[in-house]
Figure: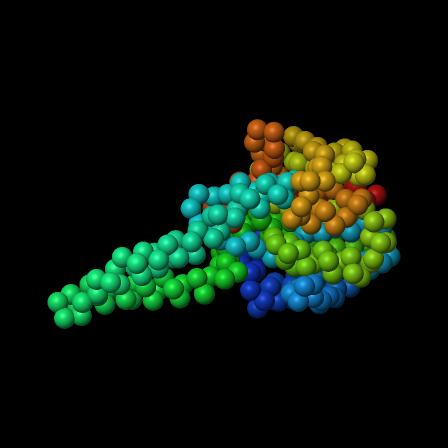
Length: 314
C-alpha cells in the first residue's frame, strides 16, 4: 500500500488509540497489513502492575537479530499551549506535560472549593432561586467532571506521535527481502506513552537475551527539521551505522542514564532511537504532539527511513 494511503488509513481513520477498544481495532488492522507484507503475526497479551497491555508482534522475536519497535498507543490530550516532547529525555517530557495534562482536574477542584466556601453559604431558594440553582449545578459539575477524567482524555489527532512510527515499521517490513525477514522482527508496543507495558512484555518474553539484539525504536518520524538518532554509550556503533544509511540533516545524541527515565529506550541495551527533531537550546524536541496540531506526517520521511533501515539490517 502507498505510504500516503497508510497515513490516511491510520492517522485519520484510526487516529485515536487510547482506550482498549480503539487499540484492539488498530492492532487488528495493522496485523492484516503485516501479514500482507509476508510476516507471521500474533498478539501478545500480558500484565504489569495489574495493568493489561497487548503487543502486536510480526516475526520471530527469539530468532531475530534485529527488532524494530514503535509504540502504537496515543497520548492523553494536553490542554493549553502544546507541550514540548523530548524523545531523548523522558524526565523532561514528563515534567513538561504534567501540569497541562491535569489542568482541567485542578481547575475543577479550585472551582468546587470556591463554590463550597463562598457561594454555598449564600444560597437562598426563596429570593435567589435562579442563582442558587446555578451554583448548585456548577458545584455538581465541578465535582463529577474529575471522575470522568481519571486517566486523561485521549488526543484525537496523532499523525506524528506515533502513527508515523507504526507506518514506518510497516513500510520497512514491505521492503525487506524474504531472507531479511528471517532476521528482523517488529513489535508495535502498548502503553509506550506511559507505563511502558509493551516493553515489559518484550523483556518478559525474551529475558536477558534481548540485550544481545539490535533494537531500533521509531518515535515521531513524520515531521521535524532533521533526523535525530539517540543512543547509549553501549550502542554508539549502531548510531554510526544508521547515520551512514540516512540522508539529509542528521544529529546524533548520546542519552545519559538519568535522561532515560520514563522512556522505552531505557529497556534495551543495544538500541537506537530515531525521531524527527528540532534543536531547542541544548536539547532536541518534537513539537505539536498531544494536541489538535499533530496533523503533519510526510510520506517522504517515512519512505526514506524505511529504505535506510533496510540498508542498516543488511
